[in-house]
Length: 138
Image (cartoon, rainbow, N blue to C red):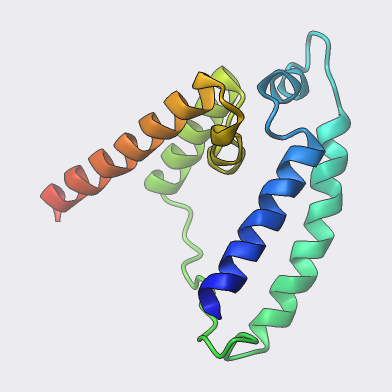
């Protein structure tokens, strides 16, 4: 049941990304281009998502288990450190350069376009390298 629910949630999330335009890198880059031909339409997507997620987060903080009986896992670390800031910077630079972030890129892989495939492969390789290099330091 868990896998079916995860699949349905992923499909719903992917459909939302497609319908909202988040899978269109030109639309994303136009949203990020504040000094050029700025397209503010993605701000409405974010403004719609924030209250929904805030409500869901608040509800889950009060629970110990999900509807499927799994333990609720809410991050407890609140420290803003160099790793967090650098991760956010790398994410933002990558998003601004190509117009993809991980969710929309994965939702776009089946479109037949090569750019989301290349982005997704590079993302997985980067995650693997991070894991390997982080393991060396610890």
